[in-house]
Length: 372
Image 1 (cartoon, rainbow, N blue to C red):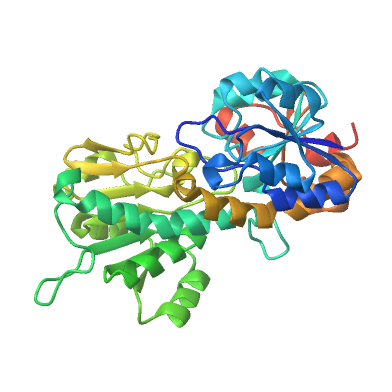
Image 2: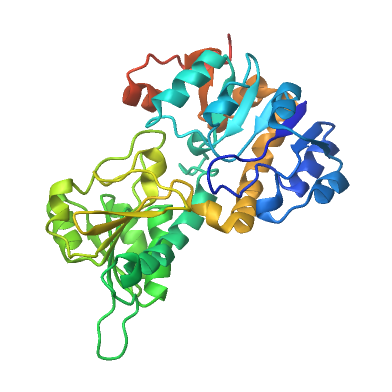
């Protein structure tokens, strides 16, 4: 198979879809790998690194898309990239279609087959291609939240860990999954007074057993959320419904009850955000204010630590990438129901129920799609 990896063009996105090691592995399996010149620069990989791995360097994205049978990326294809996709071509990347009707329409119109990292599953009920970036984003959330809390950035001027005689910041993490757990660990490690909200008693028990002395847990009801958000200095939104739009857990009306200069960090912004006032921002202009509450809603948070993120994502995606290349996407999905769960679009048809429900589009069973 001809595998192509273009340079990411989303603003302030420095990650790359394939590391030189991944390119080397794919080539060892008998495939041809084409890398756009400069694609790895943001993550610290040179063109010479890819050449040494055996990859072919191409100057433009147009050449990559025209040459490759499979396109491997990090972020969802931007409008110009979607125009280069063609019928029968395989796209393997993050998509986050539920809050993005324009991208969904373009992918359906292209006739391509699109497998989304964020909906591939595993035998433990997890999302193995989303987890590494969730870990990174979760660990970044308290860091960027603490920065936004600084007075010069519009925040309350509260130090996360406080000092002797002065209390630390009150941190509320909504969601106790991968993002929330890592956010709570780091916020607690920074000295914050941390509470994690979740609706799963099983998850709350796990968090209490493992981290009981580091942070508190509380069952998530609307009343509990409102109470804790009202008193919080920093709120981290870490709720995920796989493939679907994120639920809105903090309303515009609730902002008026929050402390002026309090901070909301919405890690769920890729799926539309879990605060009613969230709108996607970039690393170049990451924060904005609504009703005296600061919002940090960068849609590609892990891009800020591009080398770590690229390596973590590459470790997770490589086995699936090789399966798709070695077997072809239909056989690979037929052999692995967890990879089949990643199928979102095929030949002009939507194949992921949660996206169809969010956007009001008819859905075809992925099992039927691989037989077509």
